[in-house]
Image (cartoon, rainbow, N blue to C red; front, top):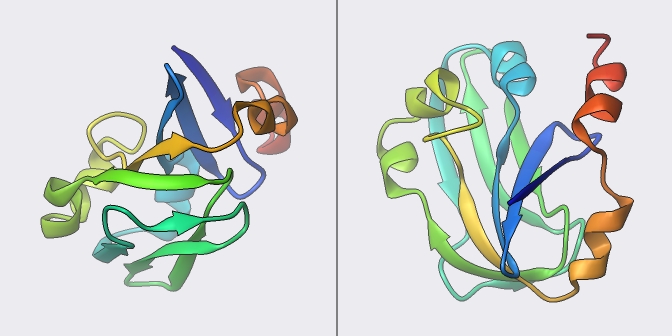
Length: 122
């Protein structure tokens, strides 16, 4: 499994053409207490940059943008029911969607962990 990051503070774990996508721990801490999460449904096809969901905290509401082209294969119903799961385990059990990638080559344009840490000043 290979993990990538975006400048929009999302992470992707890619294995066998399936990307598990979530927000980073940094993003979760910046948002604060999460109160609502809604993702597009299974079977939704999208292009990189399309809005695929919404996440709301007591501070703000933010759209989740697709970091790659693909189709949603699974959503994390536990996180949708209990948004605090994303805050508690952003880069683990708080994942948002699993996506069948249309173009695995798009991952090459994403950040590795070192580059992401430099982006957020760690």
